[in-house]
Image (cartoon, rainbow, N blue to C red):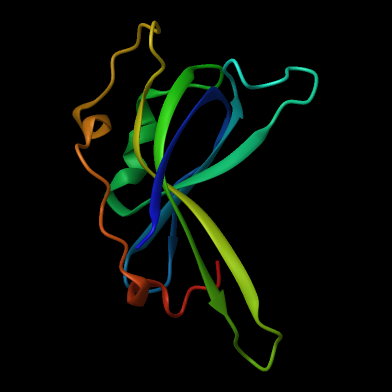
Length: 129
């Protein structure tokens, strides 16, 4: 079972939704610069998060520079294939994206997910990322 976390930050970039494989798996990546009282602006932290499947549309109502809160699952898996050395992949899979407290922004109903989606390890068997 993956763990759930929350961060706040300014949107640095928003990628396009990309489809992988023949089963319709979609993924969209975005990067935020962390903000908040524990962040040192002299050494900013940028983190990449991803949205998968129906969650990809969550970034449609947000723009670069918006301050948002993101709830995400931290998960990782080992992968080896084609005789290559084993690799460990870590994913920050966002499941809720909302404007940061005090920010005025109209968010879609998709942003208001009540709980994280279950993580199905078997769903990603052939995807090395």
